[in-house]
Length: 325
Image 1 (cartoon, helix red, strand yellow):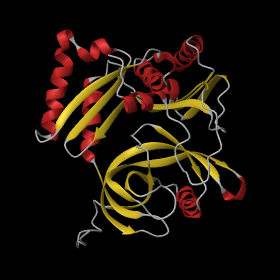
Image 2 (cartoon, one colour; image 1 turned 45 degrees about the vertical axis):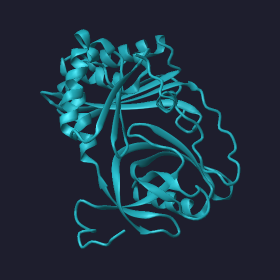
Image 3 (cartoon, one colour; image 1 turned 120 degrees about the vertical axis):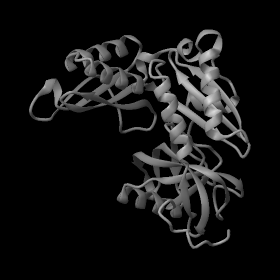
Image 4 (spheres, one colour; image 1 turned 60 degrees about the horizontal axis):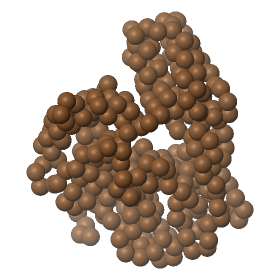
């Protein structure tokens, strides 16, 4: 790629890259088995500096061996859990954060390093949709990009609020987003219905934050959320609220839990959500961990493969093109 004098400008960030035969979206988890020396060093460096790395889809080449040629759009992945294994190998669980465009590859050995520009357009679309759909119980918005197409999948517990009467609301949202991205891109907006919202960690956190803003007692809000999640089938739940609870002079931290929340293993299906309640006494942070059972069995990865260990139900639905209409 052609060198430019502005390559190291403020809007470009240097990022280590991990080419995979998989696509990561913001807000989605991606478990990986790390066994190559180059990626062992990269993961250790990210953990020491508390920095993410970039996951990009392979355009040409293989996951193992020589550096592959990636596509130019990817997602940053932050390591949330690490399980050390023998011979320096490790299992890690990552969380997709921000979409970026690869501007230039600066180094290919021992692993890819590139200058990336974060796609602020995705953040603006998410912020707009979250604001417009505040009452539609939307925990996540997935955005898929290709050179000429843009696909938006909205996960919602209230599809009727999203669609509106005779589909007027979703049509209005699609027209507004089309104006934001321009007419040169073909936009497709879909929704995926959440059948059990009481075990969705992000929805639980937002519900507690909303109740705190309405001056509901924080203990009551937390205990009620735990009771609803347990009755809905959650194997365990943990909630933490931090701030000037009940208008106290000093900031404090309150936590409640029920059942087990095994954060030390990758086979656990655990969702994490966070929200902020803006009260008259200040901001109160809410964090929720919801454990829904062991649905993934860790299987040994054959030599020569660093593929994801599993796919979540949402990833399977997006990959197969199926959604609950």
